Length: 253
Picture 1 (cartoon, rainbow, N blue to C red):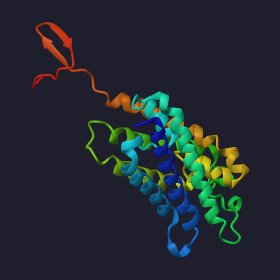
Picture 2 (cartoon, rainbow, N blue to C red; picture 1 turned 90 degrees about the horizontal axis):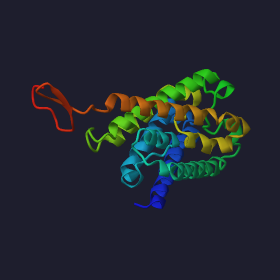
Picture 3 (cartoon, rainbow, N blue to C red; picture 1 turned 180 degrees about the vertical axis):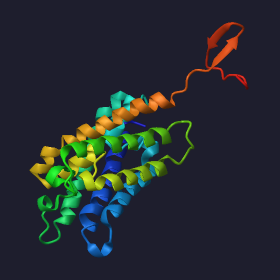
Picture 4 (cartoon, rainbow, N blue to C red; picture 1 turned 90 degrees about the vertical axis):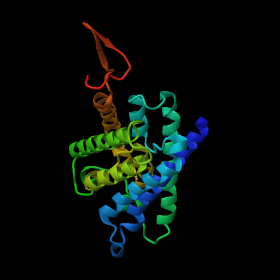
């Protein structure tokens, strides 16, 4: 598969994630009779990743998230040469999705992207429940760490085959259930960037936090997973000499 096709898949998948996840927050959660709420938005984000992972993972690996791309590369599971093309495609997809959502949302009289927040991530007075910067950074680091641990484990060659998108989609739902009240939850710099461009100056001014914290969480996860999941080479005793090798030890050793 060419780099261009992989990048196109990443852009499309990220578009779907932002359009579905942020769209549920912007268009559906504000309708009281629908009863969407935080839980519905969290589920929408999880479903976007689950569905597009099954649709596109065989093309690009279905990252849809710069933090995931960087974390997988740091863990030795993704070529570093593809980091920039993937992130560029993810940003294009996220911004395109936010633009389409803006066109739809402004079709309703009186809609104001700045006043509504446009599902942008924020802290302080722009946090859904008023959480400050320190709380926001901690939440984003820890929740991205957990999300990447699930991704690394579910996509490990030793994990049960075919179930990774389900585990990853459910993990994204879970971290949103925890994090939406704190920051609207990012764990994804591309997801943060798209809506921020339409929400206004406050969202752009706070955007740095939603690049820094998710990438930090992803890097910590890459180190942690490799530390606990890498198997030592088995050892075989031959007389008084200890020999290391790749041959599996005999039963009982």
